[in-house]
Amino acid sequence: MPVEKLGHPPPVVQSMILADAIHRDPSTRKYFILGTFNRVGSEKFPTPPIPLHLYMAITETRGLTVLRIRIVDVDELYGPIHESAHTVDLPDPTRNWEMTFSVAVIFPAPGDYRVQLLAGNELLRELRLPVVQAPPRVRPPDEP
Image 1 (tube, one colour):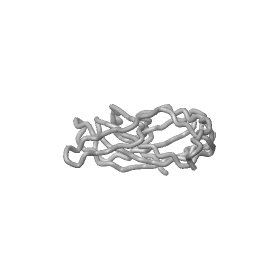
Image 2 (cartoon, helix red, strand yellow):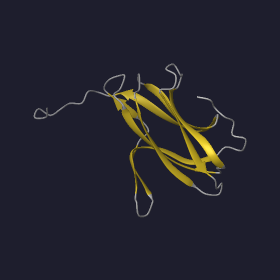
Image 3 (cartoon, one colour):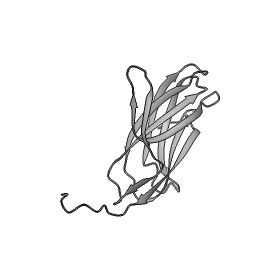
């Protein structure tokens, strides 16, 4: 995927949050961020697809911008385990723009990962996301 140079100062990320779910109220247009987290646990690896919901608020934008979301392990041994590009039109640099993205990610092994937000080739924000081996879940005797 080609990466373009912005040609102007990059947007400013005011917040970037991982959550279990994000709801937007249709009447007020407010976002509700449900179940924030900063670590993932799994009993087995590679993991089944794990849903990640990303909320962000950015400003200092100038028109059409390609925002890229990358998820990589800290040493980039596996290459990007997720990469997506989203063209957004954010014309007013004085406005605070809120947006959400949802992805499902398969983590190949336990370790430290990074959730990165880029505009063009500029890294705007990065979240550390440890992925750990979780102990097997003990099921009650009456549960299948």
